[in-house]
Amino acid sequence: MSSIRENIEVVRNDIKDICRKQGRDPDKVTLIAVTKTIDEERIREAICSGITDIGENKVQEIMDKYEALKDVSNIHLIGHLQSNKVKYIIDKVKLIHSVDSMKLMDEINRRAIKAGVIANILIQVNVACEDTKFGIEMETVDSHIEYASKLENIRVQGLMTIAPNYEYVEQTRPIFRALRKKFDELSNNQYSNVEMKYLSMGMTNDYKIALEEGSNMIRVGTGIFGKRVYNKN
Ligand SMILES: *Cc1c(COP(=O)(O)O)cnc(C)c1O
Image (cartoon, rainbow, N blue to C red):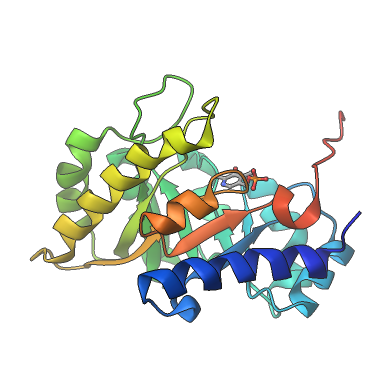
């Protein structure tokens, strides 16, 4: 089995190769190590191998690991966020990738004001309109962004998507391409509090295609830490 360090090296080399072909700077791509179910020791190993950003999909796991990791890594919330849990993470995360409703935006804004922080968010888009996935539909991205722009303690920094688990990974390409198009369209927007900075797309199976289609933030778990073991308790 390859080590965490070696796995990170492989992903970094892929980022470099793809960026070189496109003539873009590989340092402008953020590699988020997805650390759900991963213990602190292995997360530290990843950090020692150059990881600066970690992603968790559960509020509880962020709270459990926060004290140990807050000084050594940026923490991203990448999983679904329920309104009633916003208060626990509002001052702990660098970026919330999974904002998918106006109601959630309201709560994030309210809690950010209360905590005296600015909340950086991405809008999660369900590009393929899968029933099983969270995220707003492409047609409503503009109205959500317009809504967010009026919330004083929120900064929209981009878009996020999770591609469907297709039989052939190449099938994800049109999904990533469509979101990239939307991202570019919105890059010249006139809204206050909205800056298209991060396009968060690509996971272990599909990050190469996502990068080819213009992603600048990839979220890799299995590809770094190996297969996850879920505790049944
Ligand atoms: C788990 C997860 C990932 C990473 O998935 P891998 O296939 O292990 O790379 C990325 N994004 C989100 C939102 C996740 O929940």
